[in-house]
Image 1 (cartoon, one colour):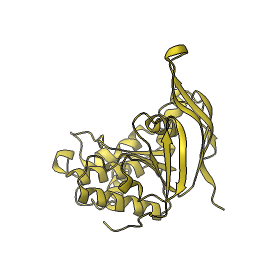
Image 2 (cartoon, helix red, strand yellow):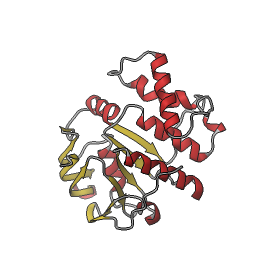
Image 3 (tube, one colour):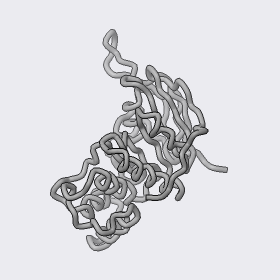
Image 4 (tube, one colour):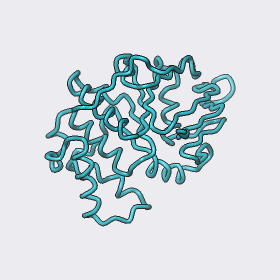
Amino acid sequence: MTENLIEITDLSKVYGAGDVAVHALRGINVAVAEGEFVAIMGPSGSGKSTFMNILGCLDRPTGGTYVLDGEDVSRLNKDRLASVRSRKIGFVFQSYNLLPRLTAAKNVMLPLLYDGHQHLSDKQCYERAVAALESVGLGERVRHRPNELSGGQQQRVAIARALINDPSIVLADEPTGNLDTQASEEVLALLHQLHGRGVTIVMVTHEPGIADHAERVIYLLDGQIASDKQNGTSKKRGKL
């Protein structure tokens, strides 16, 4: 039986207090099993960004519990949250977030250098980065800087960086938002490959056509789950 990687119970997030309090999340209950590919949708102001920040241990809830990979991370302090992020979570952002002066390989290496639990030499870090780039089809671009890569290639570098620490989950926030159609299809094909290898993926998107690639779609509205459905139209694609 597949175990739940994420278990969220009565999760709430409130910004401010009194008459100016903003209830960004209102009693969210959801579980994500290991190996699932889930899309999070919702209009602006629905709470999906707040929800992803909490999933990514970038923020803490006001109430409720969040158990990630068997560990309750709801009340951890900033240092312990940072440790969880480095060990268990890989991030893919719409804007890539690559350092312009570093090569693709050195950008991919960064999580290893920041993780105090990794005891690897610089050579070992570099070799792992090259292997990660090869796994996303960029083995011949290891020495290229971001301005020498297309948008789709930059996003694949970001995906390689997200995978370098062998995370429990990959969180992708609008991963195709800055890409043209062809590059979007390449990135989605890569996400399908990762999903096929058992990687758990949670992806935020506002585009129904992109959400169609997930096997499950959670729709947020006014800080609550409006629907949570298996996606009968999920597109199974795995070739770059």
